[in-house]
Amino acid sequence: MKLIEIMEKAHIGRYAIGQFNISTDEQITAVIEAAKNLNSPVIIGTSEGERDFIGVDQAVALVKTWRDETGLPIILNADHCKDFNSAKEIIDAGYDSVHFDGSKLPFKENIEITKRVMEYAKSVNPSIIVEGELGYLPGGSDIHKEVKINIVDLTEPEQAKEFVKKTGVDSLAIAIGNIHGMKEGGADDPHLYLDRLEDIRRAIPGVFLVLHGGSGTPREDLQKAIKSGIVKININTEIRVAYKNALKEFLEQNLDEVKPYKILSPAMEAVKKVVEDKIKLFGSEGKA
Ligand code: G3H
Ligand code: ZN
Image (cartoon, rainbow, N blue to C red; front, top):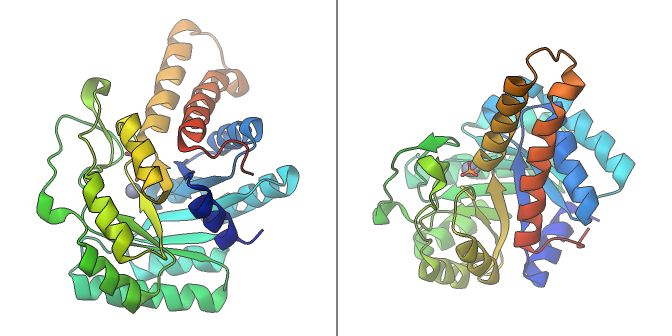
């Protein structure tokens, strides 16, 4: 199945595909094991820092190996490319999908570079998926004390329409009150502006809508957002926290253990649990 068809199927079936961010080989294994258990499509995401760590070519090779072995729809996405060269590098390396994040740039410049990425990506690989971003999301994928949402940063439906028309992107990451990262102590993020999502959906009905900052978002909001047209949800911080906590706990309790495959097993289990929970929540179980 072509990548666009995997997204189209989610769009029509009113479920979302999870993008799970990783930076190590065993985290990929954990995500794929969850996908295998639940027969679900998945997107593996790597931000610039994450792919610097695991290696761009290595990420492509690992995902290809898993796709060949399992036959599952597994998409590799380069998350938050901040400039054209960063996008070009991963397009040339054979990623399935590219996210150019020009959300901090002036509107015109965001359109210009997104369009350039779009044209280059499709000239190299016509079936690659290109995701643009409009509206500003505060925070990074870690634990924070307080992050404020400014209404002026939310995606404007009319601007989204112009952005999509001028760039031709397949997907659009939008800001509707979502934030990267999670609050200290595990408290829920603020509610999403679901009315804004409805307005955006009406303005750009043919585009796949993406929700970044899925960690910590109230569960019922995620389900409502999927009903209103979100087809891809990105999860990073919850994976990072689960991985780190399991690793810390194991090492504290097993001070003499030196075998990496023993040390890392509980962390992999913890990642798998997070991913399985999200697959069920997003409704993509059994949709592979
Ligand atoms: O691009 C990655 C995501 O937007 C992750 O957000 O760390 O809040 O899950 P998160
Ligand atoms: Zn993001």
